[in-house]
Every structure is written in structure tokens, then in C-alpha cells.
Length: 76
Image (cartoon, rainbow, N blue to C red; front, top):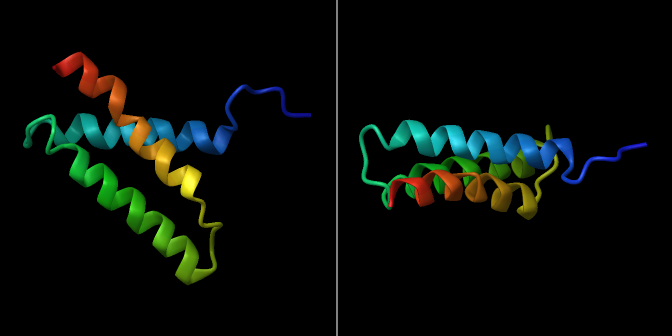
């Protein structure tokens, strides 16, 4: 039985979004750092959809982007 508040898969997407955003702030402004997060999250879900190797999920896309928000808030 899974008693987690957030499913592990969604938490992993959140963490990856945080990492991508954090790394991109070294070369981009905080607002522009959302772009790599959105592009990579979208590419991952497109890959899942077209390859059949994963399960495409719009919530995964959103959780990845939401991972960038805490870092963005600390930078503004």
C-alpha cells in the first residue's frame, strides 16, 4: 500500500524540474530558466507518447514545471 502524499513518480518529476531550473540559472535569467524546464518536460512526455516506452502524463509535465517554482521564488 502506498501511503505517500505525492506519488513517487510525481516527486521525481518535481526534483528533476528543480535540478534543471537550478542548473539553467547559471547561464540564463530566472524567468528564462523556465524555458529549458518546459522544453525538457515536454520532450520527455512526447518521447513517452511516441516511443511507447513510457506512460505520457500531463501531470508529470506539470510536476516537472512546478519543481522550478520554489527555486524561482528564492531568486526573485
